Structures are given as structure tokens and as C-alpha cells.
Length: 318
Image (cartoon, rainbow, N blue to C red; front, side, top):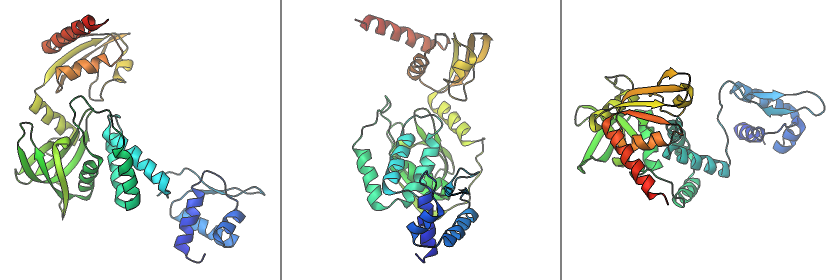
């Protein structure tokens, strides 16, 4: 095998198998001399791949963990498995990994061969995810298109349906994707309105990256997550939440979004006071799912809803 780049890729593929490879076996597999294998190992190290060598009659080479993650070589089955897993992570409320899943999925699908992209889509279409109660779903294709435009600083066209059903066409400079517990939002500068806007991604249709590059603008009010939270508050109206939990603060913090932080009021009690932009229906459901006793001091609509829900559930119990 005289083609050095091809040989290096084949060598790297072998080393990414979790085992130790004797130099003689690598030389036999690649039809080269042990000396050539040693030179190729040095080349891989120069490229950032941490290849460890052990001495002795049973010594050899193996790829180990380094300080940074080098590019990986994946076979067809591995690529399909990772793409499906990333799509699942991007589309479901797995706190903390949705945005990273979208970024990784955009990179992978950009280089995924057509035959493998078809296999991923076929498998995805054959499964039915458990969606949220409001039925708001987002396709991975839409997310990856938006993510690619954000990363590449590329202007984006799409159709958008407002809350009242009005359909419009938008041309924007995408700034950031923001994931909440229930939805995805796109923060972007709307060129038609000459102002910043927050778009619900499940209301975006036919997104198209135009190919026109732009210089990113500075968001006027903090980071994208803060801007999105304020936009949601303006759209939905805020509620003054006041809940006391019969559990240590550490227990409760682990079950709340990062921006909601309760205050200890005793060794085994804590209290949360915060302005939130959620519906009373969702707040009641979220509190019930926390697996801890609680007392709601406000707002009144939430107290009323929980009382009504409690009565309904108790009378429906056989």
C-alpha cells in the first residue's frame, strides 16, 4: 500500500478499535514494513492522535484518550447509530444536551453519504416519539438547517406562522438556537422588520440558507437565553411563583431548571420565589412531577388550578 493518506486512514481505522495492535500485525494488515508503521504512527501523533506504544514481546500500539477529541472514522452502522441518537437527543427534552445534539447532528449530516442519510430517515420515520401535550414538534432537518446557518453566519429565508395563524415570509440573520424544556426558539435579526425577533421553531416552515454571509450583530440585551426568556414573558405574561418545598434545597435544585434557584428556610425545607413565563397548567404538571411535597403560596390562578385538578383526580379514582 503506497498511497500514504489512504494508508494513514486505514491505520487510524484499525487503531480506533479498542484493542492493542502489535506492530507486526499492523504491518501485515497494511502490507508495509514495521518501519513504515512506526513512521505512520509518528505522523498520526503529529496530527493530534494520542497513540500509545508499549514495549516487550506482547507490546504494540493503541489509541488512548488525549487532551482534545480528534476526528473519528466511523463505519456505516456506527454513523447511522450516532445520527439516530443525535436526532433523538435534539428532538426530546433531555436537559442540557439538546443544543449540543443539534450542532453535532448538523456536522454529521453535512458529510453523511446519501445512502446512509436515507437509512437514518427511514428508521426515524418508522418510529413515533412521545410528543408534548401541545403537539409542538420540530423536524431534525429544520433544526440542522437553522444550526448550519447560525454557525456559518448565513442569511436565512423561511415561512413563519404567528400565534394568531398569520403566515409571513422572513429574511433573517440567525444569531442562536435556544432550547427550553418544551420548545426550540431561533433568535435572529429580522431584516424586514429591522429589529431582533424570537421565532418558535415549530412554526418555521421551509427554511433555506441563502448562501449570503453576514457579519454577526451584537444582541442588545445580554445573551440569547436571557433575550428569549424576556420575549416569552412579553408574549405570555409573567406569573409571580411562590412555592415552598418539604425537601432540602439541594434536592429541589436538581429537579428545577438552572435559572430557578430556591432559598433554604430550614434544614429540610426551601422556598422558591420567581417570575416565570409558563402557563398554570404546565407549572402544576411540573410541580407534580418533582416527587416532593410542596405548598403553593401564589399565584392565585395556580392555586385554583391545582385545587381543581386535585378534586378531579380524587373523584376519578376507582
